[in-house]
Length: 100
Image 1: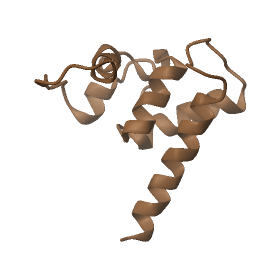
Image 2 (image 1 turned 180 degrees about the vertical axis):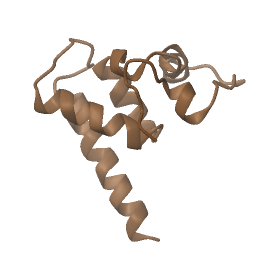
Image 3 (image 1 turned 180 degrees about the horizontal axis):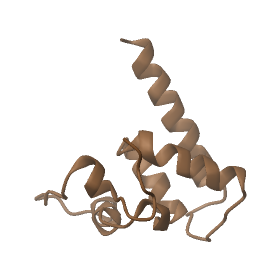
């Protein structure tokens, strides 16, 4: 199913946000980005979703495109955060497919 990055959000892909009894900066960051169109996510939000394994198949191509085109929105905590998240997601995907 093709995904429209201008209109589709993580909520559209994996379902609505479910509130938790836990509250942390990570949870608040994910919750704030959950309903944003994929194309409007910041590099930090993309990295966060990748590190958490959320909607990876949809987020990964967007993140790779940003890194390849050197799109820097000054949202990353440190330089190279998005690239590191991509590498981590690729390793996790490979590890998961190797164990199947």
